[in-house]
Amino acid sequence: MTLPLTFSPEVEAAKADGAAIVALESTIITHGMPYPQNVETARLVEAEIRAAGAVPATIAIMDGAIHIGLTDERLDALAQAQNVAKLSRADLAVCLASGGIGATTVAATMICAHLAGIHVFATGGIGGVHKGAEDSFDISADLHELAQTPVTVVAAGAKAILDLPKTLEVLETLGVPVIAHGQAPFPAFWSRDSGLPAPLRIDDPAQIAAAHRMRTALGLPGGQLIANPIPVEAEIPAETLAPLIAQAQSEADAQGVSGKGVTPFLLQRLFELTEGKSLTANIALVLNNARVAAQIAQHLRG
Ligand code: PSU
Ligand code: MN
Image (tube, rainbow, N blue to C red; front, side, top):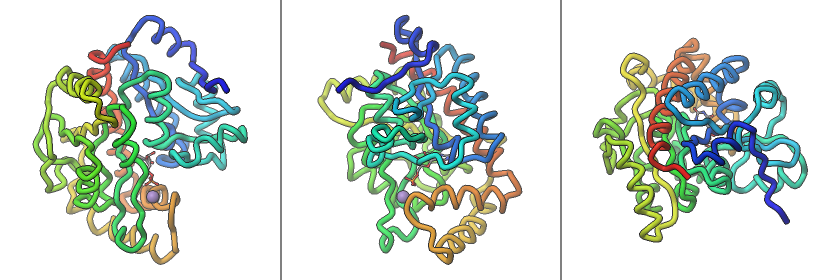
């Protein structure tokens, strides 16, 4: 069976030239932001990567193929489509085999990026250990993917809707390097400081790339999580968010939201409870991550 990989003309050319390429996920488009901000943000993020001298490769499943890089028409169609599946490691093959339309989470994007020979990926925040996981067992497959697929993921830490101490513990257990960029603390998505120290810190993108290559040389599977804080001017203080997160979480519990529905529900409720401020911050941090990912990708070509 041949691998159902379809490259956009832009990414195809970048691969032929050995140019720097940055993968982008699509769940943030279909399940993380409302239309039309989702498609506007996706275009801004792509533009940011091009401005930083790299080529963006937004990844999604359409028409039975893994699309590496979306044309403008495909990006628009995805952003407006209803009932797009949220794909992780478990459901990627089924979506492809059945010809459905699917958005890739961090886990699925890492798998597809690796198949496409792309080493760096920018997103907003990774999935992690949910609050109350001791009862629900809700731990994102993103964490296990970081432990087994060799892609460097640039994110603004993990979302403050998660249990961050437990998320860091699981990452440590799985042997995932968690590397803060430009500061010592582990960032908490909308806020720069989670109150927890990051296990590792590297400020130089070239050194982040060297660490990526070193893992491969050592025969260690898995990637790296680069925890890049939201820009100062865009952050929402953790104290402001804490009561709103608690409210959103108790609503999710009361309504019996579970499984794949939890993260999209919490993000949507926070968007409403912050009167859109969470989305503005989310856009700023993704752009910032795209910039850093493009710098790392310059040192991980080919
Ligand atoms: N970051 C965002 N918005 C999102 C996500 C990340 O700013 O919607 C998505 C990512 O695709 C991530 C997923 O992989 O949420 C995690 O979902 P879960 O908790 O169900 O594993
Ligand atoms: Mn989950």
